[in-house]
Image (cartoon, rainbow, N blue to C red):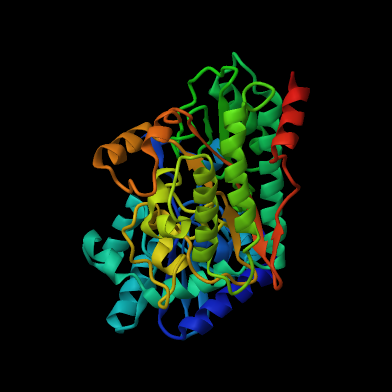
Length: 465
């Protein structure tokens, strides 16, 4: 946890922004895998962590903006729990570290909510994303679960995002810790991968690095020789010389802050000539996007910079044709680059995504209202501000089914050379990804640099054999 004053200040700022009503924050509970006592790895709700720092299940909190009080609802350990789990910090001790002096039993929450409702006070809540919290919240408010989405407090959502989006110095230190562990995971993968191993072998090794760092994974590992599958969590393939291995993985610290990197490298010692061609284009887009990072720049324009760089490079290879600006405006490049250039990162690897992409990545001025393939997957479009932490991860992906569909439709025939694309259809996919904080004058790479150029990667690979 941070110092208690950090959490006190955060809650005070939140209450001062909302000004009136009750702010209800639900923590997460345990989630059983196959029976009650065999649970998934517990992860506290990120907004609850942000304002209270307590990573324990079955908690809730109320911030009363009118009466300037903060109450945490939860139960102390029973003797049966102590027998099985040992004596741990009491809830009061945990709350003391968060600067909260008032704790009451969990079952007192319903009465507190009912009292506020009977007084016609506003109950501000965030959109729940877990089934158990949806049921709990619906029961507390006396509404159907289907009504919760429309009843979520937009002022509360916007206030939380405004705070969490700007990372403080102490948060940057914690994020850099996560990023450095993530970097060690990626370097480990480059050092141990070789023909004959499975993707699982490499994934297991880097998961160990995350655990040794004192936390866990920030998201399920993507370790695949089929990089064209954007979120591929199958790890059963045997590595073969001549293939590329895409590793997209990240560590989460014990405090919940995330790192997120991608690297693509040859299973053998070197890239093939064809792999170098595509990797160089993707890396050029990566570096061009980084060059655009500064306060006041729309991330949408950072994305377009990456798209145009990719389209221009593919045009030089003969896979695309025509005017690059027109091709990108039409969305023709999305045959090869189907997703966004990056996303916000912090207590969530896709920071605050549960609060709504339209509020996190966009604004009332810049709304996301496109259905264009590729562009609709861009999670972040708004103007950048100092303190934002985000990823840069443009890639190039050859998806056979997508190529076949677009070719059959003759889609964007004025921009795509399908005859040439056919020869590349089973190339796969690749990307590099890094994490940055926006500064007052530009941006700063988070964490120690991890090899990403062809020469740097091949040097690591050569030493691995």
